[in-house]
Amino acid sequence: MRAPAEGTLRRVATFAATFGIGVATYIAIVEAGGGSPICVAGGSGCQTVAESSYSHLFGVNIAIFGIVGYVLLLAAALLRGDAARMAGFGIALGGFGYSLFLTYLEIFKIEAICQWCVASAVLMTLLFGLNAVRMVSYVGRPA
Amino acid sequence: MSGKSSREARREERLQAESQGDSEERRRRLLQIGSAAVFLVIVAVAVAVVITQSSSDGGDTSLEDVALVEQELQGIPQEGLTLGEKSAAVTLFEFGDLQCPVCKSYAEGIVPEVIDSKVRSGEAKIEFRNFAILGEESVTAGAAAIAAGQQGRGWNFLDLFYRNQGIEASGYVTDDFLTEVARGAGVPDIERWNKNRKDEAGALRLVQRESEEAQRLGLTGTPSFVVAGPGSDGMEVLGTPGDAGTLERAIEEAS
Picture (cartoon, chains in turn yellow, purple):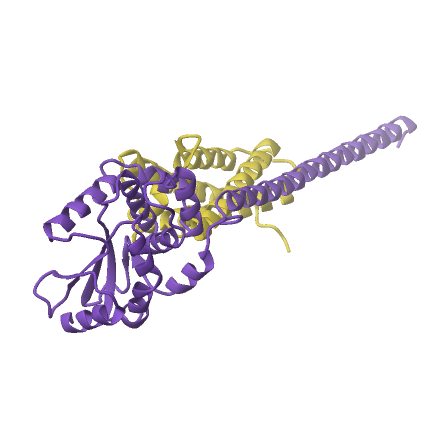
């Protein structure tokens, strides 16, 4: 199967990373104000997840790491060349792995699902897919 | 074509082939790096899951009846220290002290009977309230139960605590004991539970408020039962009935 054009992959990745920045920023701002994200479909999953000890890593809210990750992914999507392809793949892979771990924590440890975390996990999965296809299909080739 | 220009053309072709070879070699190397990164992330996620799993497993617990408690409460909704359907018309309140041996015998006999006959069916819900009369350790234990309730495991904690109760005020209510009970009760986030149970303005204050409420109701010992429902005159004090049948009848009359 032929891979989509690199330009298309980069454009979709740009949109996904921008949405990701929005989601992570919302969670970070709400939690910095002492609250928890509002679950759009109701329920208290978002509050339970936000109050859990897993919502912080080294004392820093994980949404902050999310913002940094998505900004780097946005930069990788906007730049050309092998460095951007490899960096985009590496960051998306790390983010995807971490999202998997967080989803495991939500289901089996915290026993609550936060829609905002699910949204972020879906975006990170999409970004991982896009960056993986971009890397495998175009790395080592002219930009 | 002269010999010279033909040599140049061959040289050009060779350089081009070399450059293509270099580019393929570079691509192969980068793809290898990518594959190694995928492998590393898979290993990292697996290790993180195993570490998290082992740090909060009931695992090698020395507690008794962990499985029995789980089985007894399986399928019954709970919120805070309330067990049963939220919509149940009648509420049976149990004012207890986690250190009290009589409460333990009720927790092992009479209360499970009422849970099976009236709570599981949705006829009534049962709410545990602390009446801490046996000293500071009762307050500590009560707050730990409230914190477990904040993670949906309040009744598992109460039941497991009672079934592993020590001699009152003997100093057995240690952080280690409480943590073991919390793990056995399936409290998912032990770190959060630890923070919540020590919250002066939260769980500890609530134990004090509930104990004050018990005194206002005129209760004199533990466990004491109170019933409230559409057929009751507000909160009706039942005292400490010696059998499940009395509690079941009180629930029926209050419904």
